[in-house]
Image (tube, rainbow, N blue to C red; front, side, top):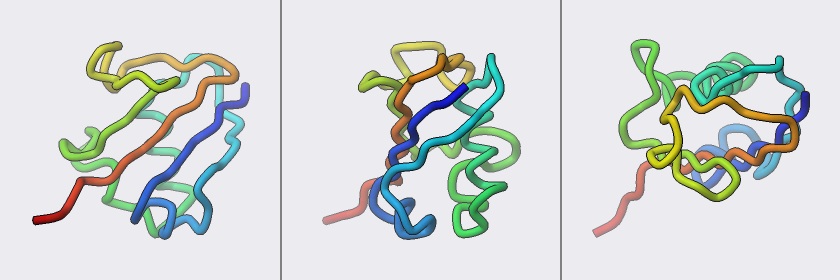
Length: 92
């Protein structure tokens, strides 16, 4: 099945694109997608997943909704879903 992944700020710089279309297996979760991205793009390694879990400061939206309001990293994706990854905010 196909999903669309949007990457913001430093994440898209590491990949060289703001949007990707990924072919993923049925039943894939948000955490699975983060792992797939790290495997496919070495510039993302260690920036999305740490010790087998999603980094605490990474914000993920599925179809515009925070995964905090869904099933967290266990949120299962469906064909056509849009997943957005935001790096930690910095500023002052």
